[in-house]
Image 1 (cartoon, one colour):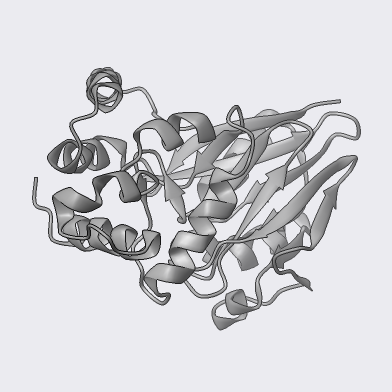
Image 2: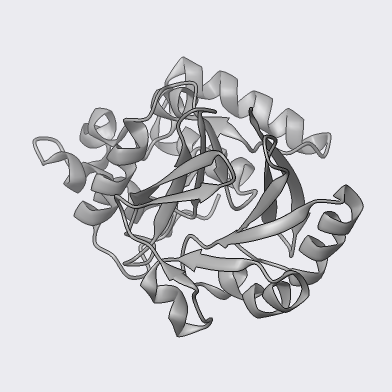
Length: 253
């Protein structure tokens, strides 16, 4: 039976995600940006929370762990780095798997934004929760990792099937689109950017995206094709990615 995902806004620009295994009725919360909002959504849906799946340690992703565990008794699962701000019941890393009822999540190493960042992939339902590694038309800042680590992480995600739905943790897409247009003139990107701007004007979310759409239009995944424009011609792919990331870090559009 399928996995049902319920998405809702949290904080200023985060999304909260509740995922329910329809075979058993058990639910997971992917990250805990805002405990109160998450508990209200659970009550509204009438779902029974079994797991908290953390992608990384940042407070807008693991800061609600203690309150949600106290209210629900959920098991907290995440990479070891989460213990910087929260206790863990189970530590995971790339190559592990986590069961939510009959739904199997593969844990994908996705460090770069933070060193121990992970993503959770439900292959049967073609769903990936990617935290702050991959965004719609963007990627996370390299607060702890190096460009080669982040590039490798993005390539692991890009290797997923093109129709995989990607649930990233922030609504950054309009800003990302403005940057993308400054470094890439591909017609597919231009069309997507127009759709993004229109959706945001209507107050509609741009998440989830898909792996195929990101491979076609995301400048961070397209970095090798943009190398010449950014002074990285003849460089290795991760160096081209580093040039795109550096340009985004100073972009003020």
